[in-house]
Image 1 (cartoon, helix red, strand yellow):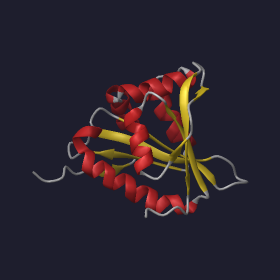
Image 2: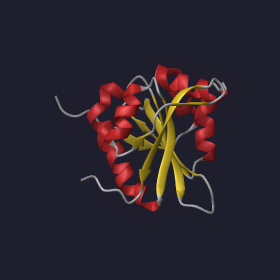
Image 3: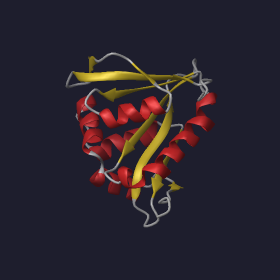
Length: 161
């Protein structure tokens, strides 16, 4: 069996609505724990604040994830690289990992630092971030719920080897 393919798509309201319904439980928890937003509100905020954002869709046009880059300040070259995924990601593991790595290899060097926060309970996301070259902090309380989170950071010039 070959690798299941994914393609880039613009994060349209229709795709964001579908992704909000199929969003992975851990990602829903992160959005709620941060500021009590719904999945759709979290997606819409991410896209509206992003310098650039995309969806990965399968051959049926179903969204597998949405991701983007939010520049945190005009005075620095630090950016928030974010991704919110659906329950479909495990079915497209190889293609998803290839797209992820290509995205970081292309966009990472444009910024001195990449940063975001990941829920301490979101072990799959933590493994993915570490595979992508991010360093995770020790847990600390964060967000409106004051749940345990970890800061994920990566130097833009960091190499893979």
